[in-house]
Image (cartoon, rainbow, N blue to C red; front, side, top):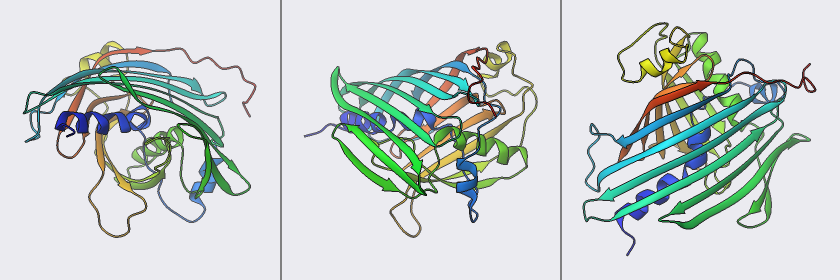
Length: 296
């Protein structure tokens, strides 16, 4: 019988790419909107490396998970001229009420071209040292379609509607919406999660802007990195199964504070029957390196 901690570990590993891109935002649905955004570069996102300490959310009751801890290291690089790349390592140790413990180790990488026309992704997930997922794939907009090509775990090709957006555009869209004072946006997102087979509908709720210090536990790390006075907003992003019609509960929910330059902190990862919190403990802002070959 599969233990509760194993089920939790699989749920975390299945959402590895969502964490790498899950500070993503939402696209405000309107006729032709997705097509217009898909050909535009993403401005304003700053290269950085962030480290988060993870723990079980004490404020969320769980009858199944007794303890959890871990660390996430997130690297965001590139520019609106050369495209954006991400690398994520997400390690968690989860214990259930029966004394079962599972160690999950998720490693992901992505690249998104500057015009939002192509996207590549790779994920490896381990549970207790055993490889449970090894997936690689890509997506490309061509001739009015969005083609997804999977190389692993098995070779296959399929199309999804062109309204689905890639992660960096997603992130830029939520920041743009927040900057204009919007408080709710919706989007269809393809980020390569669930072995590249499951695009999501998402909805983001955006709170009031903050331009100074707060007392939310990890603001000092942002201040030390020199971004404390950069505009930032609290966001709750819900993921829904895009194939299910009508009212439904989110499959997964991610809350965070996002800065105008794309940095995030004070994360909360809600898996339904348990939740993790992520505290930013280190932030290194990186210089922007631009080759210029793709700049307009």
